[in-house]
Image 1 (cartoon, each protein chain N blue to C red):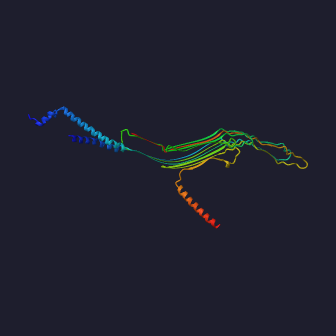
Image 2 (cartoon, chains in turn green, red; image 1 turned 120 degrees about the vertical axis):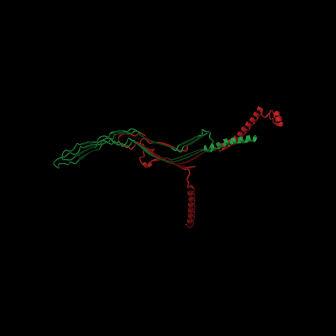
Image 3 (spheres, one colour; image 1 turned 135 degrees about the horizontal axis):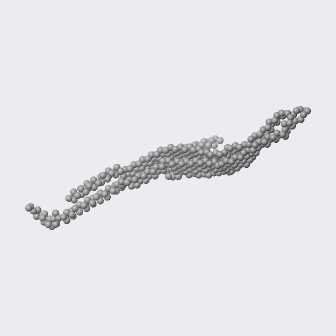
Length: 198
Length: 199
């Protein structure tokens, strides 16, 4: 009777254990993640409030003839005033590539193997060119000149070609704002977080 | 009515009888105890197998190729007022760069430069590259920052250089190059020695 009881118990337990073993084989979890990324950033940023021109006008007297040709005035204009604001160029590049988060939760109480394979391949090229200008402004005064080509009457008469006046203009005023160029590059590559919870 | 054999009757009387409910209960208890014992033994044998055979394998393979080139320039100068007054604002450049690979900060660089108000021109260049293949890491860093720090200088060739550095952590051909260099140096020494004898 004891033998029969023991055999029955063993059979009963094998009947429980074998499905458990089979269940173990079927409960393996395999996660494979492959990330391939190629990122190329070409950033050109510019701010320009400069290269302004406020020159004064030119004045030219051209006198030709005989007789009284003097007392000519040529006054060039004054340069204007240039005031520029600030030029600010900002480039901000953020590359967040191949950030892999894998969470495996065996909510059935499985005891199988958990295999997580993560492959991250990334190629990143950043080319950032940032420029800011507020300069290269010109406010020159105008040009002034007298061109007198007259001649005298000869020995019997006099001529006056003198007394000519040419005044160039004055330069103006230039006030530029500040010029700021800023570049920020942040690369966060291949961040892998793997969590297995049973 | 047929009576059981005398022995049976005797033992049955001595033990209280086969059909005695107490005897049946005791036998049932023994059976249950045996079964529970077997269950405990088998579970004790199986559970460790489950626990040992359950593995967690995390495999990561990462490769990185990164190249960063940054150029910044600010200019508020180069003005011509023909003798008039000139007031130039500040020229200011800034570079911030950071690279994180696999959660590790492999590069962090920051520069701030401002130009003299009279010259008002400043420039900075920055270059960084890194490659990662599996466990082997090869990092090359080259930093160049140029800025004009004197107001009287007007020649672009006089730009000052600041913060220049080059770092290479691993060169796959380094051994062969060093070996070749040593051989060439040895040959050069021998040639010089021979020439020194005849001269």
